[in-house]
Structures are given as structure tokens and as C-alpha cells.
Length: 164
Image (tube, rainbow, N blue to C red):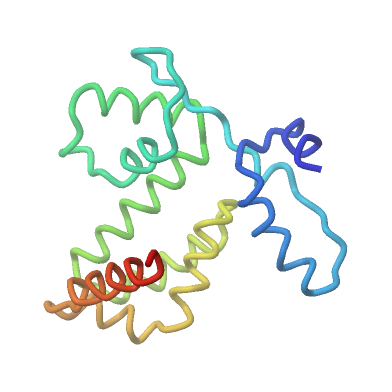
């Protein structure tokens, strides 16, 4: 099945595909995959001609234009041309970053609406997760304090515990 889906343009791993299909299996529904939502173009670095890793692409997607080096800005511009999905994701990420930094909860509602109607599955899942506790998200936007450091340490300790 993975080979058939890869022929349609899917570039993800078998584990990601399994996670996507698990929900349909549990629900007892027939499994269908829309190639348009799973296909992602390979992003090629315009300077070197090498394939860009998803981690590098993600970092370029969330980094503001003012913090990009000249080479990174060229990559971002090339990726926007190659992939409309990258352009959409970058625009949504920059807007969300602005909402977090600006402290305006009202703009979050508009962002959630726009992001919900995108074709990007990961963004739609993110919107679904945010909507499960909008009060907490609103507090994260408006409050100046955070318990992120504490949660990070707890997560690190749990990871170490599992590894033992």
C-alpha cells in the first residue's frame, strides 16, 4: 500500500501513514487517502541543488524575515515559488507568531478560522487541539508568565525514566 501511495506523491514515512490510517481503522470506516493532502513536493536548495530536510524547512518556515540570513531568505523565496503549501504554512506560522507576541486574543479567532479551512492536515489538527482549550490558549497569549520551563524539565525527567 505504501508503494502505491508513494506513486501518487506521498513522501512521508510508513509510521506517519500508519498513524494517519489508524483513526479510520478504529472507526470501522473504509480507508481512503487523498493524494492531494498527503503529497508534498521535495524542496531543493536553490544554492546547492540538494534536498532540504524537513527540519530545515520547518525552521525556515517559522523564522521571521528580519532574522533570516541572505541565503535563508533566498531559500524561503524559492520554497514559496516551488510549494504553495510552504507559502501557506509560512504565512499562517508568521500570523500565529504575531498573535502570540502581540497579545491580541481577538485575532486568534480569525486565525483559527483561516487555518481550519486550509488544505494542510497538520495545521487543521493544530487548530483542533487549540480549540479543545481556548481559555488556556487565551491565557498563554495575554499573560506574561509561563510554566514552560517547569513542563520542559518534567518532560525531560519522564523521558529519562522511560529510557531506564
